[in-house]
Image (cartoon, rainbow over all chains, first blue to last red; front, side, top):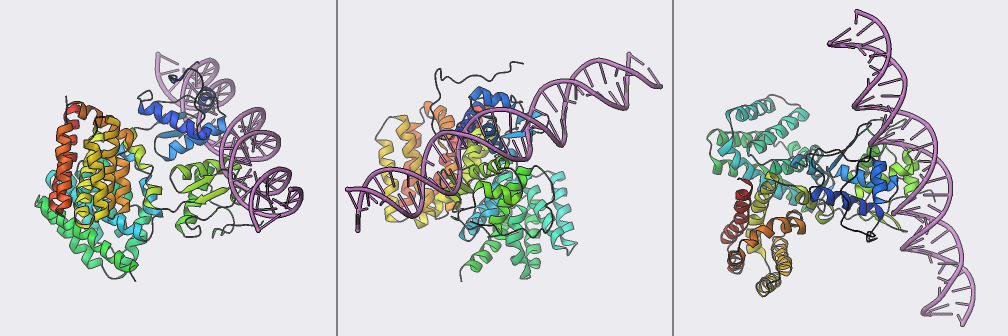
Amino acid sequence: MDETLPSETDPVAAPPKGTVTQRAIDSIKALIGEGRLEPGQRLPTERDLAAQLGISRSSMREAIRALTVLGVLEARHGSGIYVTQLEAGDLLETFGVVADLSRGPGLVELLEVRRILESTATALAAARITPDQLAEVEKHLTAMNATDDPEEILAHDLAFHREIAAAAGNETMAAILEGLSSRTFRARVWRGYQEEGAFARTRREHAAIHRALVARDPEAARAAAASHVGEVEEWLRAQLAP
Amino acid sequence: MDETLPSETDPVAAPPKGTVTQRAIDSIKALIGEGRLEPGQRLPTERDLAAQLGISRSSMREAIRALTVLGVLEARHGSGIYVTQLEAGDLLETFGVVADLSRGPGLVELLEVRRILESTATALAAARITPDQLAEVEKHLTAMNATDDPEEILAHDLAFHREIAAAAGNETMAAILEGLSSRTFRARVWRGYQEEGAFARTRREHAAIHRALVARDPEAARAAAASHVGEVEEWLRAQLAP
DNA sequence: GGGCCGTAGTGGTCCGACCACATCCGTGAC
DNA sequence: GTCACGGATGTGGTCGGACCACTACGGCCC
């Protein structure tokens, strides 16, 4: 087959700036940005791509790997390389890395961002949530209160907030919040928080959020969510202060 | 030299799950997450790292490249591989990719997130900004109004909001906003917006934000910033509707 | 003592080979 | 005619080695 990518406007030679691999990354990103590669579309083989850019397969593989971890490309063993759907979930998966590797003051700042977004998302959800979605939220709320297994509580806690974020109707915001609530992040922060007997308080706060959703009261929902995250934020701030 | 990384708790063999490269990525991430690799620290050579994990140098290079684009590692040609400072700016650089490659509804959602964060950041800035920072903001505001070159306006517009975000005192939020205002993102959206003669309106809105900062009025600042971003958001929403 | 320059060590690039897996298509049984 | 099987083909995944480009260090010369 003579499958070929739309060629660059460059007629003679590519400006040899930066490493070869970086150029390859930028080239592919540009192809997508300019719409010459559509979401879901299959790319030429690694070997062909390398040949078209005049670089080795090794370098091209590094470029593809880089774009893979960024959620832009997806490599399927034995099948080919594909452009992802380029939706919020695909591209924001890497956001979890930030939450996982931040520490100290950065963690507090991350919680501050989460408080802002989570409160807004909860307010939006109060206005938009459907009965089905509300039932799902209640399911996790009930399950969360019905067990003492920290692992299970954490899982339902995550799902509780995820459902609310989804009900807010902004996938991008939901994806960011998902990253800010990554499993390891919560495990690192929540663990110490819950160990101080904050279970009862957490339950009260979750109940307040739920009440606001049922009442379809955005302002009450905003306040409840902000307070919920803010509690943890203050606790963490105190932990880092002395 | 016999430089060696702290070994895994695993005594026999690593569970062969996923690709070899992915394992290497996770291993290094884990080393950093567990604090066995400090920010700024130099890693063993690619060859040593590959040997320690029992994989080829090629695969290890892909792993390193992946962590490099994520802002976790930094490779210096001829010198070695180093852990970044792991600060917000390092890790959130990839956020720009999201803004660059999103399209359609995703762009509106992105602007919605920016409106929420930008309004809060501006409100915080109104309460915390120092005279020096305020002078810097005014410098860009003046420069922005003194030229007709779109490129220059865009540059000062970016700097204007960047200074305000910095004055809010949350580096993480500032880094996210920086990504949401990436050059190519604004170029794609603002271009069309400004072409419709929105210059005057933009100037009024910037002036309103500035007044609120000078008056140290957080609520006015929040409203002005929200309105500023909201205008573009509404315009873009209308563009995509028909 | 200071500056120059060679050298060892590092990441960057390339090549070629082989492996593991997915897909497609022809073959055969039913 | 339909379907299941199985091999052939093409793909990404891994490996090993070679060489290049650059940095950093230290000894040499002035």
